[in-house]
Picture 1: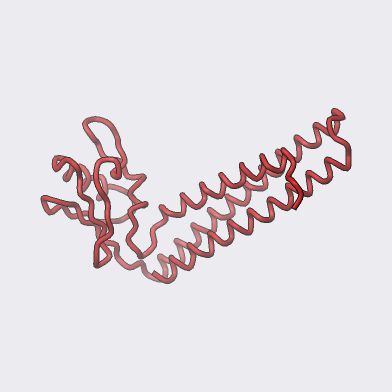
Picture 2: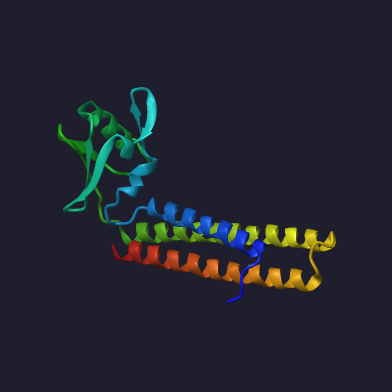
Length: 187
């Protein structure tokens, strides 16, 4: 394939970052399988500073659909338990004096459908963000065309490049969505 224009490379870079963000956000979506990524957004009071749990403890997935949280400082056990129990995720943390255990109940079919619906909305938001990147970069090309920096042929070629990059990134977003949908429905 021919070398991409500067506009196309910039658009591709921004779109890839958008996809990375989408994939990162999907890691936080609960499935029936235990995942430590869900706890990244839950903050615990660590000596007066709100701190993500994964920065004050070791998180691991144990047997029987349980995440085991082992704080580096045993004084944090109660704070971690309280933070998880008061979060919006609907988990119940149990502090046994050494570790905090969080069970992951199997979601019902209805809950799974709601989760997939939410993920589908995230996919649509991602596609809108990708299209906005295309729109902004094509606007820059048109500005450069109007100020005679680019010829009409160059501008058309670059617009086509960006459109192709958008198509590739939208397809990748669909693949990411389908993988998460399968994960939610099978777990």
